[in-house]
Image: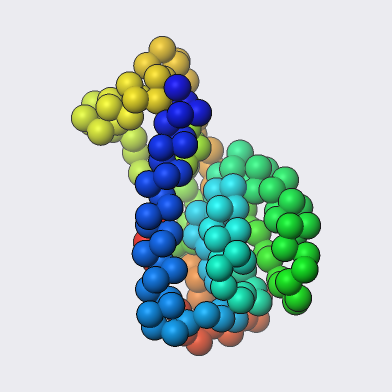
Length: 172
């Protein structure tokens, strides 16, 4: 059931990705000097930008220690898959990117893409529906808490001596 659910989600996600491609194509944006990926998860956005655009630098931020380990494994595969593209610099960071520098707690959900720094309302209708839909209602430990670090984009870019001129925010 989980596999079928993930396939359905991937199918609907493809429509959203098509909108992003159309947005950039309609605005004649085909090349990116720098892409900042907030919530790197397993590298899906990295693959998306490498596949559809000419991209020089990708900085991917994934605060979850579990997701970050998966991202590290996947980044090797991604580098091999896109090795024919020249001068690509991919940097992955085990950090949250946010409005201030602080330590936070992450609620790592058993279904990793739903992890959040926000408190999880287990009485919420959407939450209950998702648990039922993913067939997780018998799971005892639906999420674990992890201490994470958040940094601002300006502090990160200053620390790494990066210059970011323009950016477009895409909510995915």
